[in-house]
Every structure is written in structure tokens, then in C-alpha cells.
Length: 446
Image (cartoon, rainbow, N blue to C red; front, side, top):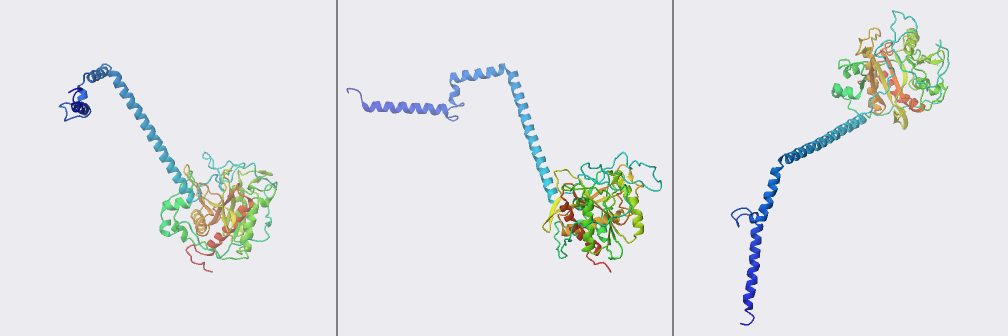
């Protein structure tokens, strides 16, 4: 037929297409379509390229091995870096958690102790030959040159009548309700770790154990005191009389710790009806200049005959303010007022370096501790943000003169005068609560 058979041409085209598809399947698909591996591995060009690559690798085996080792070393370094970063992140998280816990439990650190003993010289060097029957008192902190100073006689002989700078004494409501943040149950307080973490701070220079710090024993002590307005029962003094505050006016005694003592005397006298003796002598002044090198010795020498003449004095308070970094402020709010926080400071007459300090005897160490703890217990129950803890240091700090002796740190140099005076209101309240009843709730026997 002319021009050929069109049906025959179409058949050829279909057969050609099917042949191309079959070859493509054989080339791409492994396994059952070929007895060996993929069919393309049988092509001469592929075999040539594969042999060339393997030959090159076999010819330069040392370089190949070195590359593998370097790569492994590099990956190892990267893994170690990642692990180190992970460990640092874990440590940061732990530190943040610790800080959060510390903030929740309040700040129990002391930035600047009342006194900074010289570890190589436990007793201060006296300017005169000491009396061998009278132990030397401990050294004192370095004076703050920015504090205002006055120029009285070197050691005044008599006490001044307190100057009142408050016309009315602010009253702390007797109806205040307990609002403790901490668990104060006997079972919890029996846990030594809990007690140490929430109530005490032990200076690194001394040691205190569970026998010495026993909450149950402290709470059993009876510090109740029957009031007698005919005789002084509370004595307030200041080993460091020149301590001042952030807004103290130079030369104004009412703006120093003396003024704070005046206000505390006023509250205890007018609101709680105690008779109070406020000793205002400047034990840290010598020849008109600030000198704290023997302030505790001067105070002891002055107070011992005063206490001998006034045997009815049962409570002795050495009122201070603390020293902290300038960017730190110890303040809370009580009864709507900005109020400085307080800290109790106790001496154990024991240092890790020297052991028991026989030259600083104190028969009332346990009584002092119990008295401070009961005051802190009342603060924890009624004013949970008010107290900072009980700081335990190695020396004596004149706490040997009465069983109810305390060294009170009210605020710091970064507080205002008014904030510290405001702190005397809740402090007077917790002091009166301890003196009026047993801490277990039993009213004192009249």
C-alpha cells in the first residue's frame, strides 16, 4: 500500500515507548529485575568512576584517617562545650533558687558585725596596765568617720534626763492578732536545721550546737517580771552612742541612737508603765573624739556600780544600729509606717581559734540566748517581717551583767531616724509580751 500501513507505525511507536520505560525501571529499581545489584552498577562508566574513587581513597589512606580523627576530636570538643554550658546553666538555676528561698525566709545575713575582733589578738591592747582581777573586754568596730561627733567631757559622771522629741507616744494596738509566716509548732522547732535556717546566724569565728540552741528549752524559761513603778527595772544604754542615720543632722543628739533610746524609754514608761533608767553616757568618746577601741570596757566599768546600786533592774538593753553596705536598707512596714528591721546580737564567749574565753566569763549565756529567742519568737508571731535573726558571735559584749541582757541592732546607717524610732514601737510590744507572761501562754503569777 502506498505510504505504508498507519496502524503498523503506531504499533512501532508504542513498542518503542514501552521499551524505554522497561529499561528505565531496570536502571532505577534494585533487586528482582536483575540478579545482581541495581543495573546501573553494571554500566562501564559507573564502574570506572567507582573504581577511581576507591583507588584514590586507598592511595591516600593516611590523609583519610587523619581527617576522621580530627573530625572526631572537633566533635568531642563541641560536646564538652555544650555540657559545660549546661552545667553552668544548672548552677545558675540552683543559685537563683537559693536566692529565692533566702528572700522568702527573710534576710539572715549580717554585713557588718557590731565588733570586728582581730583573730590574732583576742583581747584589745590596753592603754594602761590592766587590773589582773578584771578581764579585758573585746575589741570594737572601726569608727565611721562620717558620723557626727559631739564633745562632752571624757567620761561624764551623771546621767541626763532624756529629751523627748515626741509629744505623744505612738501606741501599738493591744488587739493585734498573731500572723506568723513560719511554722512555730514545737515539732518543727525541734528540727535543728529549721531552727538554724530561720532564727540564728552563727558567725564563722564561733560554734554553736544543738545542745546550746534548743528551742524547747528556751521557751520553758520564765522571764516574766512583776512591775514596780517605784524602782527602775529596765536599763537602756549605748556602747556606741554616736551611731547616726541617713538623715541625721550633725550635732543633734535626737538624730542619733541616743534619740532612739529616748523614744524607747518614753514608750516603755508611758505606755507600758515600767520605770526605765536610760544611761546616755558617751562610752565611745575620748577627749572629745570618737574612739571605740575601749567602749565596751568603759561601759562595763560605768554600769557595774549602777547595777549594784539598783538591784531591781532585771532587763539590760545595749541599743545599737547596724552597719551595712550603702545600697542596702533594712526596712519593712508595720501599722502603715516604714519601720527599720531589728537584729539580736549574742556573745558566746567562745571562738574557734581560742576555745572557751575564760577571761570573758558569762554565767548567763543560756539565759541571754533564751531571752533573745523569746523576743524573736514573739516577733515571728506578731511582726514576721520585723526581725532579721539572732547573730551569734564569739565574744561577750557585756551580756554578763543580767540574765535578761540583750544587744539590739535597730536598723542601720542607711535607715532614716524616723524609721528606726518607729521600730521601737513593735520592739516595746514584744518586750512587754515576754515580760508579762510565759511564752507558752501562761500569764505570769502576780
